[in-house]
Length: 224
Image (cartoon, rainbow, N blue to C red; front, top):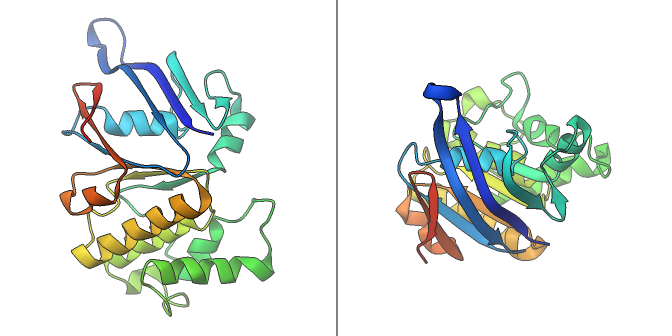
């Protein structure tokens, strides 16, 4: 089922200090589709993605994720939705005290299918997909910033989520690593039918998307 955003409006602050950052945003993302979202800083990209990812409450408009309307969900309902979403942010937020394998496997804890027998093979396969095969027993501190970001991508994808939300996932990566990461997301979208939404300024990876949406001053338009 698709992701539906209908007339989403969001305002920071109250009264004379209020600022409307989303102005009636509407679009639909279909199963297996990769969307790239562009736009200048402050245009509303991150705000929109955090709302779609059930990380930020909203009052105006509708956001539906695979048949579930996010508005009005209680804490338990929001947590259940987040379990079906893979997040990749600019800051990797890896746990330094855990090995690379353990960082990736941590994303599987709490899922119904999680088990000691299957978690390690899944983590290994996803690290291989992002070009880090053989690095699982090391620690994040021994890696470059770009390598740590690829671990964070593996951590998000290993859940095999229904929806992937990524905010500037290739910002710290060289061209080859960026292509690996984007190819892994594209492959997951194709094989699992999940929706992938990527906010990025990186023109090197635009070609991997099915569509590109552009945000400007809180409004969304389709580019291609």
